[in-house]
Amino acid sequence: MASGIFALLDDIAALMDDVVVMSKIATKKTAGILGDDLAVNAEKASGFVSSREIPVLWAITKGSFLNKLIILPLAFLLSYFLPSLITVILLLGAVYLAYEGAEKIYEYVIPHEHEVEKINTAPLSDAEILALEKGKIKSAVVTDFILSVEIVIIALGTVLGKPTITQILVVTFIAIIATVGVYGIVALIVRMDDMGVLLMTKKSKISKLTGNFLIQALPIVIKSLAVIGTLALLLVAGGIFVHSIEPVHHLLQSLPSIAGEFIAGLVGGILALLIVNVFKKLFGKAKTS
Image 1 (cartoon, rainbow, N blue to C red):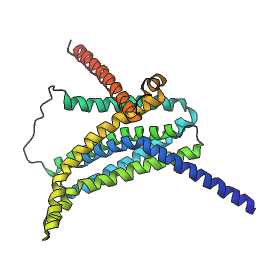
Image 2: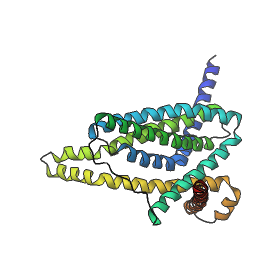
Image 3: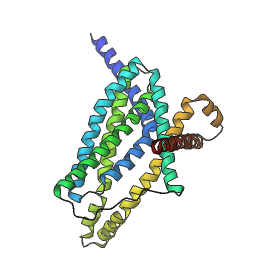
Image 4: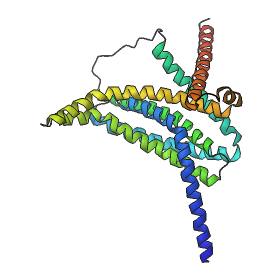
């Protein structure tokens, strides 16, 4: 009886050790997406009245948890019954990430016409403000769903071939980190200016300087996260290409890993962007004719 209990405890210890190791690997693999998730959500959660920032962020966080509850069971079923599809979905996700990164660079670097947005200067009613807030929350939750699918699939791709219980524990851990960690940091970021204003009211010169620094730093932090997120998108996508497509791996194996992954992600993103733009032009011509 005692030996059976000790054997069970030994199995549990071995399982947890495996889960910890695989969780570290999965966290590294998904770090780029988490960075982009952070940048996107920091942007989407800002711009509200100060008193509404935390309630809006909490609403988005609840939506993110619901997304994970939908995605995780489907991902585990797919991994159990059709594990070969995980690699296909992983590559499709990499193409999307590379496209998104290349598109952001294109928007910043290449001069082109933008649609002119008409700014409504009329004061909004309470109902209009509430509708606008709900619209931004819905948009943020939809974006979170897309990023969550990518995070879960990438995490799942690192534990393919492992026992089902290991897959469930590792991927669930990453999903929780993706929600609690990202939205916790976003909450700190969007409240930076409020903390700065509070410190500005103090008599201490250091408090005033710190407060002014926090207020001035907020837009810089959000812009920096956007740049880091773009680079992370290309690196994550490139890493998937390099490790999943044998010819790409052989072509870039002589380069440092980070350089090879960046080149693979950038080239893949440019190709995806060109194809999408060609289809847009063809579709636009067909629509006007």
